[in-house]
Length: 287
Figure 1: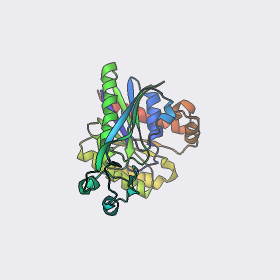
Figure 2: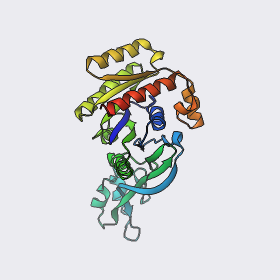
Figure 3: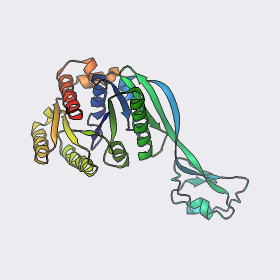
Figure 4: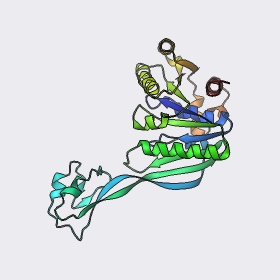
């Protein structure tokens, strides 16, 4: 079993569109959407949920009105301004527990917080594991790890050979959780100054966790000079360039129709993505 995680140093580079195409092109695979802050892979795969589970993370303060003496100490000392009229805002409360410690009559307790849900779904391309955080809930590596764990369980149980993971943007905790232990990271960038800068950061993360990385330059032809600079930079540090995808308005139309580009159009971008998957697949299975 091999796992490829599609990452980018920033949002909006097109990694989900590419991951959706991989879902349509790969065989014997499980799909995982680890961008739980803004999960959108399901928009391309049209899943039918077969399992829905709660995700509990962190704690929120709760005030027992029968015990509270309305002294106001908690409201005065809350660093997050989360208590008003002796009611705790679940959106503002950070779960630090300070109010519970300083309450003179022990009227405040910390209760476990239901932060979202995770799902197992069927799609025409294979099983999909995804998650959705609740309103104002913070992302955590714990939820990303849970999604990956469930995807791996399905792959083992059904004998699938590949896991395709759509990872979160950036280089923070969710990215680390989605990257750790993967067999290959496909880093999607774009030919801009910030694109190169963010690519350099995510490459360092991959190196730190000893995960092999390869690069795809999306919309390379909008700035071919910068694309060449990115290509030369990758060559200089020993990073393989798996592909370059041209700008193509068919991508937006495919998203609007809710299907992967390779099933919607046979234009230049779709052709390059097919070749990109062939290169990624060969890196996953070099023998």
